[in-house]
Amino acid sequence: MMTAALVLSGCANLTEVKEERETLFAGEIKGDYSALAHCVAAKMQTDERKDISALQYSVRVYPDIGKSEVLGAYVNNKYHGAAYAFHLELKKAAPNVSDALLKGGKYEGVEALKTLHTCSTA
Image 1 (tube, rainbow, N blue to C red):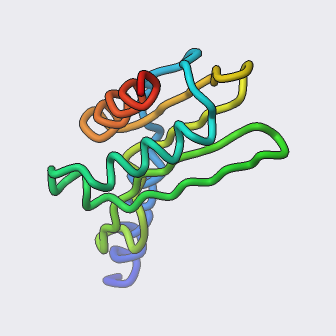
Image 2 (image 1 turned 180 degrees about the horizontal axis):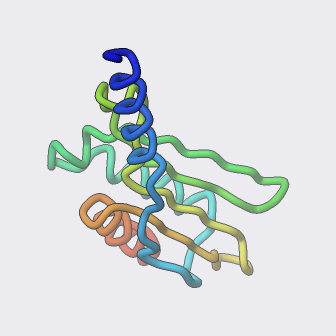
């Protein structure tokens, strides 16, 4: 009986981790898809706020398909793995223009969006 309760509580936690994040931005943005991804991750990693700099950032670039991704995640032992704070996907739309899709939490995702706009105007 105790084992069943532990298994069920574990399944509830996994459901929370896989929860769909809110779309915070979808549209075109000025900048190269790869450069924007690296800029967002670098700026957020060096942010002075502990809850932003403590995230683990992963940048993936797929030059063969003109796409990059930035994942901001925090490790939480409660979930036995990483839970994503935001996911930014960038695709080449034209020279120096990218299509961006950003999903994330209301705090970390909004900070990623601000950083994306900062990187776009740099």
